[in-house]
Length: 263
Image 1 (tube, rainbow, N blue to C red):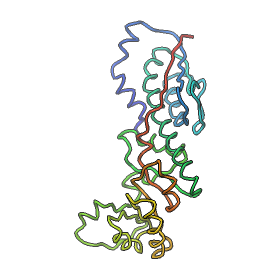
Image 2: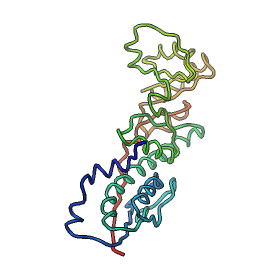
Image 3: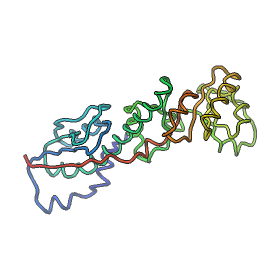
Image 4: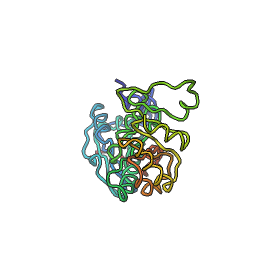
């Protein structure tokens, strides 16, 4: 199994820390990562494992899923100063991204559940290469779910698949079969044979009439909406079982800052 933090460190410090070595910095110190804005903590335990693996002591950290406020110290560690200088930048960047994803997810879930307490907000598999493990975890911490983890865990017949299919095949699988129809007519054709329909780029008003008609053809059918503006998620949540979004992955990183002191 790849240790992603080792990869991040090898990328940022492949041959040594030229600056710290030039300044002949030695001894023990303490790192504090502080937030300048409100957020939701995520993947703190993963970062703590990395620090301990490198011989540092984790003094404190905000629990995954807990909220923090501006000026809160969200992660604190101490130990060998040269090691701290190697780790602090990738640590700050990592937390700024995963905490932002968790925060954006929680916002979307809370907004959607104002109109539908049972709605599921799930993210797509459009993660950044090399960061999927933590992006998926941050979504879960924020209260969301995963629409698809990978090509290997689910079946989704997309519009691109439908565009190039040369013949119809019998749809039979141990997994749920999800179809993303290209047109309203195709949605009605797919409803009786699909377990799940993903309806992209419909308005809430269109879904209000379309979804009951589709469920009349297949009472067990699950219906989701995608390609929506998160600002309207509450309007969409009234009419579907789940909403698929990529937005949390591209949330603006939280504004964090780090301070290192000698002890």
